Image 1 (cartoon, rainbow, N blue to C red):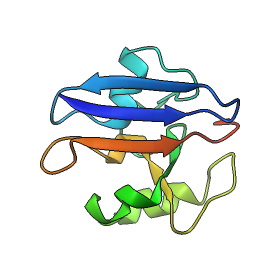
Image 2: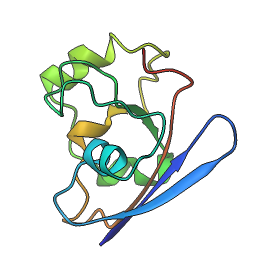
Image 3: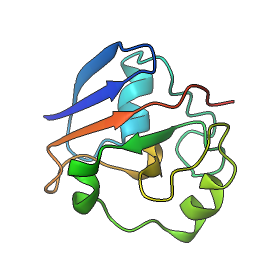
Image 4: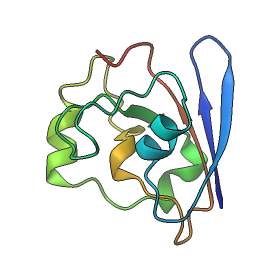
Length: 108
C-alpha cells in the first residue's frame, strides 16, 4: 500500500492508503477525501482533481502529458507551473510509495 497525504487549505490533512496502480484521484474519491471531484472519471478532461505536488515528490513523477498540460490551463484555482498536476494522472506504486499534495481552494 502507498501512503497519500492530502493537505487542505483549512489546515486539515487526510492521510489514506492506496494499492499500487491507483491514481490519486481514484483513491481520494473512493475514500471520501473532500476537495477532489474527479468529474470525468480520470480521463484528464475536467481538471477537477487538480493538486499541487509537494516539491520533495516532483522528481518521482512521470512527465506531464499533452492532455494533462492542456487541462491544467483550465483549472479553477491558479496553475503553478512547477507543482500543478491532475490527480488522475498520478498513480502510486512503481517507486512512488508515498506522496504529499496540497489541494487548491476550489475545483470548480
